[in-house]
Structure formats: structure tokens, C-alpha cells
Length: 71
Image (cartoon, rainbow, N blue to C red; front, side):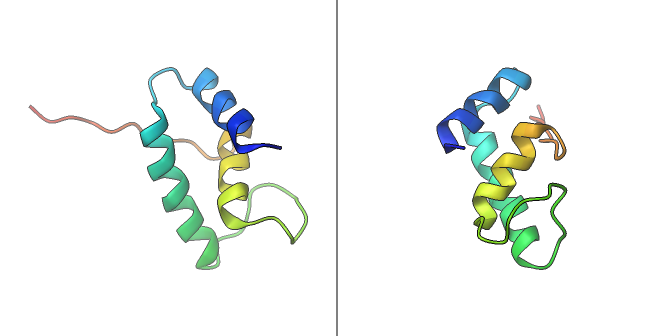
């Protein structure tokens, strides 16, 4: 699935998250996957880590923690 569609699905399911927070979350999850974390989805081995991270978030198996602003 295209990254644009996955990102739109994440934004639709998480109205309090913006695209910059998604980018940070995808980067963090990609690092985890590249360092040996198991995927929560069953997909082929030819899927890139960043695409897999985005798919996991779009399916809701990995959540995005919101950034908390301190005053």
C-alpha cells in the first residue's frame, strides 16, 4: 500500500497526531525493527522496515504516543 494512503489512515484514526509526529514515530519504530524487534504483522520479508512501521501504525497494532508540551 502507498505511504500516502497509510499516513492518511493514521491521521484519520488519530486526530490528535500530526504528520510530523508520525514521521518521528515511524523513525523510532524503524530503528526498533532494524535492531531485531519482531513485527506485529505477518508480511513478506521483502518489505522495508520503514514501510512495515507505517503499516503497523495504520493497522493500529503499534500506537503513537502524543508529545506532551510542558509549560
